[in-house]
Length: 425
Image 1 (tube, helix red, strand yellow):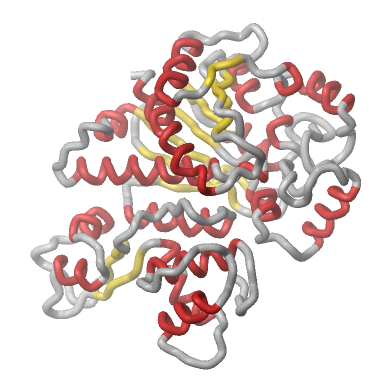
Image 2: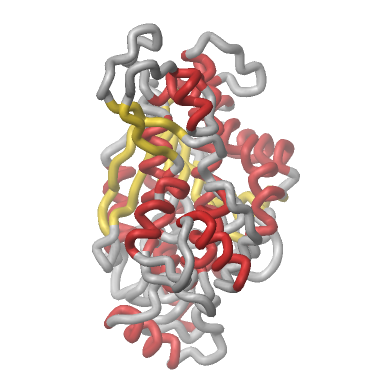
């Protein structure tokens, strides 16, 4: 994290405000480092004088973004006392530390203690930094959750994935192919948190009538790729503001002055649209996009020199080839539309499942418009595997959608993500 000072604005200031609020110093998360933020920071650090979020301050604040702390067990500690100290619950501690005996705590042993708030925030802009914190926090809170990387971006950032479940049926949901559609990232992360919370309850012997977590966990392996395009998201949301890659993006954008910068940026940091990179009618996609004027690296709609030249798209392609997915969903914004078909391919049950998704979400079920009907991940998956694949355009408005839409978007898409498994049972 960068040093932050009064007067600074942006996504990292939002993270500062979020961490301070979670630490017991509630302030408005508005991305503006003003007097209230300064007062909260002084109160949190118990200091006076210069108001700066420096390295030492961030070290103390980051646990409130990761959602957990380490606790060294002392003589006389009990799970209940530790939970009260950290304002959490004994159940959360036991879920995060499945190997401990709560009746026989070992002095000087270390516990991972989840802090007493939901981990996935809905009031800040997302970035590769925040996703890495959330992934670490989720895996710590729920040790049965598996994480890894499908590959790296142009800027060598990890593209993380999560896996929930141990079943033979594999399903994959992915998000943030387009840089200005990062509101889709917390949709997947919140679903991961809800699913893990429900399965944690199962492990504690509690019932979860609204979420068949036990059966899903045993029957399915659900893979979630929350941010396919970390470099582009960091550009749009103000994390990437300096350096050679930023200057390259500025030069690319200058050739397309009608596209707002950086808010209109959809591509990866090299100016390649990641959802126009798959070998399913790529030549036709090139013909369409070249006719629209996208014949070179651009903030959007440039198909690249050939299919599968962008490292992010290659990573998704290879990850898919390494697995046996029965169904995939690729999340985008906006339009509240579910696209389910590619050309004349109509995999078994794909239309039926699409109609189900439409009923539970209220979204329209439509054919992909011809100008966008080629070279997408969903298109290639359907062509290659003849199995159900879906592009879901969440929310309404102009990208990037405001985070104020997150609650409604998640409410509509939670039953879709659940149904992506239950409809295959």
